Length: 213
Image 1 (tube, one colour):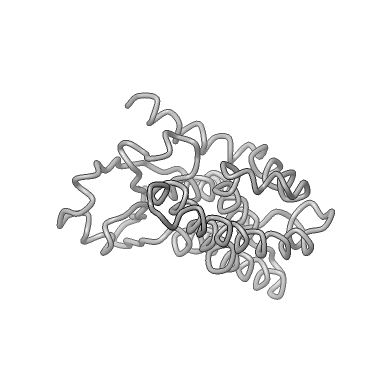
Image 2 (cartoon, rainbow, N blue to C red):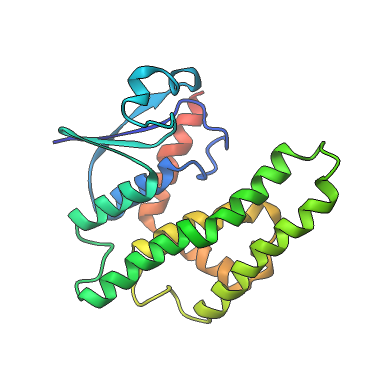
């Protein structure tokens, strides 16, 4: 059965690889799974047809036969559990890779998203100048610990895994703030992820949509 995912018809990031369908595309490319993309216009995301697939009116969604999934983390986990390539064979190593996937989403991403919200949507608010340093400090708190844990290793726990895929995807969101560059080992880690052929294929596919827009 053909896999179909949804993506923005007009991505807010202009094809920079930050939209969450990028994570799903990358996982599908890493595991060698063909897929189709159905583009969703902004006004259609809150309509009943899309809400039946994603109850919060967002992207991406994943369809395969009678299975419909939403939330990028859940979709990536489903892909890597069904198809070889992004989870180790040994049970303990597999569990650790999944733990890193959740750490990326639950521990590292929230302060990075908060920073994006502040810088994009709150610049005109009277509290912006006072709030920004506090939010940046929360991002640095997370990256301090992540940088220490990664050290000079190539990936987080042995070979490249679903945990690395998700962590790189999350860290990319911190690049525009300049904070990522304060951590040379994390910046190099992200660059290694971007250099993977599967990432490049996924990025090119997402960029092509925005180029046509």
